[in-house]
Length: 284
Length: 284
Image 1 (cartoon, rainbow over the protein chains, first blue to last red):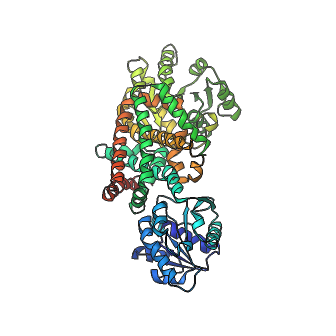
Image 2 (tube, chains in turn red, blue):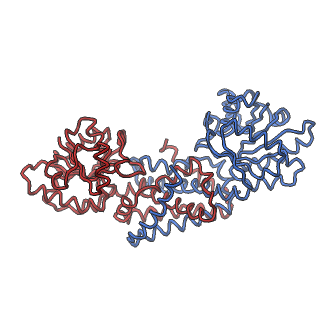
Image 3 (cartoon, rainbow over the protein chains, first blue to last red):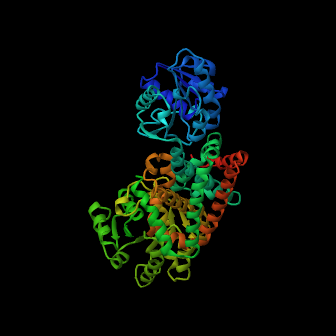
């Protein structure tokens, strides 16, 4: 099977590595709009060849849109338009974006809608670009397929086989529910990390050595603040309502802590910490 | 040298392991008020023997107070009182607590103040108790010595050698400055993790599978929420003013993000994320 990957960053690049390595792809055709990233991807050997967007859509059996969700909303309908004009009718296109409702809406009534499968492989790091791509990135993680009943069973089956080759377990969910879930277990974590980085970087302006004492705990809570704006601006704005709702709950919890500490109310602080400790049940 | 360790949890236990392993201690005498933890520490072999508090202070050359800071404030003056009544005058006591000003104040005018060295080895995990102790916990991390000019040079020298044996680099700082620094690079991270855990656990009440999609990023930002209330209540309340100050800045940053997202102001979101990205310079 020829697989076309549009966007050779962390996700697209890592998929390229493993789909080739596992023998799922016979050939990988890459599209990358940034010329520096394109030559890097070719140099590293992420893809068999770099092609134009048009060639890639023309020549691939399965097309993976691995671009930020802002770009995906523009490209996805165009890919389906092109499918419509082609003889080979069993081509499939997927996206791998972190928000789903906008994207789903953009092609809801497209005549080729059934050739599209909405997917979200839940894996990543705080790094981006072809240099960040790595083998095994998806290994053992969950992948969400959204609104699969709107895709053709054949398309869904191909995509499930592909994620199986990447050793991911697939979970089905509708787009709306997906966006609520990811707001809680992914998007808010990025916002809290960004805010933490801003807080301490601010202090660094008059306390040069503030980071000298930073240890593992701080690094762990702040590492997502290295994440790229190009990826996160469209996620946070497209999933705006859900993200705002989670942020409001979060700010409430911070204020509850603030009040308990301000009043030296040790009982209340204990209650909040013990409640939070229930996360032990969930996170190893 | 006989080393007495009062409190055989994560920190005390891990120090016991490495001080023995590196040959710095000839004998380690442990004190542990919780009988279950005491037998566990003996069973695991963390210490050579368990003793009473009085015996430990009597028999040890160097005493490590590895208890939560609330208990340390009560025990430290008592240890110094006991030193005063003893013939051997070169005994040393250290604490390993995460807040320093209260503790410093509690013995500021004690006639034996110079036998005490305030230290904070900046290493740990979110686990506690003797089972959490591990070799190499301190390896390569920083250790802060506070107000060392108030300790005798001989006491400071012994303590520096001990941290050298643990492969820690020592940094000198006054207690007030220490408490500001740790509020920024340690205490706030715990509060943000607690608040994040509370936020998502709340949602779990009506969305049972909310955690199914949690991946590495979420785990990383929330893991400190497993930390023990017994350790964190005294830290947050003793370092109250600094912690509140950092929380206020943090809540301001969250609100700035909230506003930018609510207004779909992509330029402002970009500005905030790019500013936060400067953390890349600091955290690998």
